[in-house]
Image 1 (cartoon, one colour):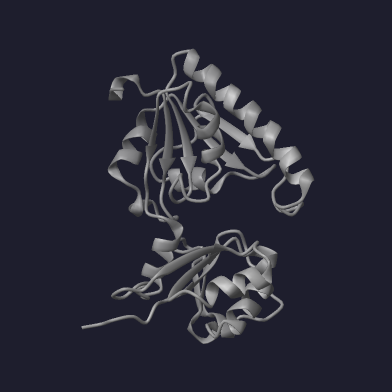
Image 2 (cartoon, rainbow, N blue to C red):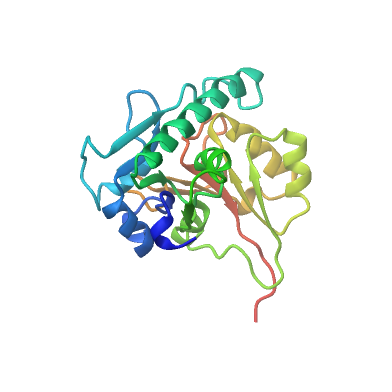
Length: 246
């Protein structure tokens, strides 16, 4: 497969600040026939907002994929998959039609496309049908620990990345057996994650980071966050390692 044959791109745009976007992602943004972004109903997608610094709005280029549900239904509930599976099927067929019409399609992704990204559900359905390139990016967690000034791993530290949707007991078990951690997908799970970190003896080392690298960035030691608070989508917790230093 050559560069000339690629028709579908998964574009990692980085953690939020467009200055962290790669040269490759910028090139595809500027040249693709269609710019695709996921969004909630009535709102622009965050990935599309990141791209504003490079490309303006052009209705002829835009394809908005509007989620049927986001946080209204827990991700482990059967109704969640029942709503999203046909959504991804329809979206994949829509993009396939664009490619078959001879257009180059760029799917805009916050952070890295292969790290907890919605694009993966399209890639899985289209990878055998469409020549595809995934453009990697600075991940949200990398942007977060860098902005916090908190090196995440030292020496032989082991890093564990966890979704906050796990049961509290499982979070506690995994946190108790790692040197450093990143906990994603906070939202309404934040109080549970906080309890698990306390049970694992990591609460005092934990740092809460919201909208890393964005204008509304917030970086606070987790113990200073109200215990009952729910977190926005673009938030995570890091627990820096304390390993070997020379």
